[in-house]
Length: 407
Image 1 (cartoon, rainbow, N blue to C red):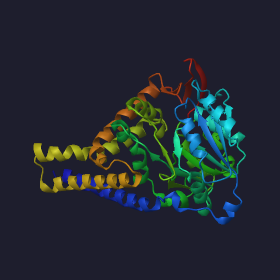
Image 2 (cartoon, rainbow, N blue to C red):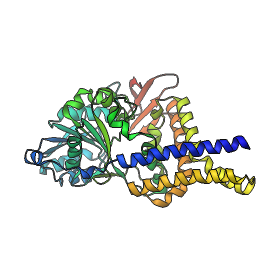
Image 3 (cartoon, one colour):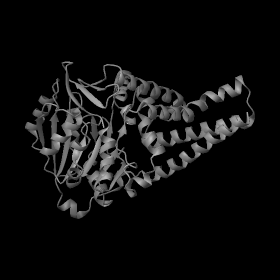
Image 4 (cartoon, rainbow, N blue to C red):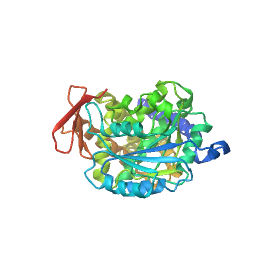
């Protein structure tokens, strides 16, 4: 029992350390709307290229484009690449482009060997862009009128080469709320923000592919999306590549300038996160097991131990008190996070449910990538073959077309 008590103290200590890091990150995670453009930039605004890859986005693309047309920044071009859509995406954008000279639409080329779909689409978009600054954003995002101006101001005022404003994630169903907040929760809890800008180590970098802004020379200096062409988590890898090449990079709270509803039901959440969770661990089953064990240890077991200790085993007060401290720290973190990112506050009561969702999806991601038909997403299947570092890509006709490297 003494060893079990020491174990509980250890868990409480680690959670307290993570809480301190979270609080520091909370203050360093700056609201991007505090940055304003100088009069010099306002009087002579540089061209900004808005680059939007779109594959089967007929439900989202018009809303996204109309939001950009309402921007308070005057000098921008919008370039959409229709990534071999099978729906009406191209025609919707084409009609809007005929009425608005700022919008241009191009048809994407056939996906070549070694590339993933979004990465190749972004690569093509960059070749059409003429702007001094490049903004990559997803077709399902919604941008408020200050989106361009605030992102550009944050980049210039902080003397950065690239940055990522983390969007506000819109979540409605219980499935969305149990899984999607985990991304920002993990970033704010584990990533030391002070080192993202100051350290040159690419380990201290992350990003969310829904919104990036680069100086033109920075983007092409790192090799653009060609440098991460075979990566499913291209957003994290391109952030790391930016730091690896010696450029200055930072993430900001972009919840007041951009929002996104990633998925709308259990199937979309399950498939969407299955697509990349295993890849987040570089397709290393051992590392994924360690990470899932860590999350279960710190964010699931306390919720199991508390009722077990109170009603089944009648553990000593010291152990129960330590477990209560652990759950209290987790709850405070989740409440602060919810207030900051406009999530549902009462969802802090469902932390163990959230962890169970993540574990199940991660296991599915592993089995589908290694032993199943692969991860299906927007007409393409991505499969990490067993005992191989190859990535097979299957297009709409379910015929294996391409082979590229995972690493």
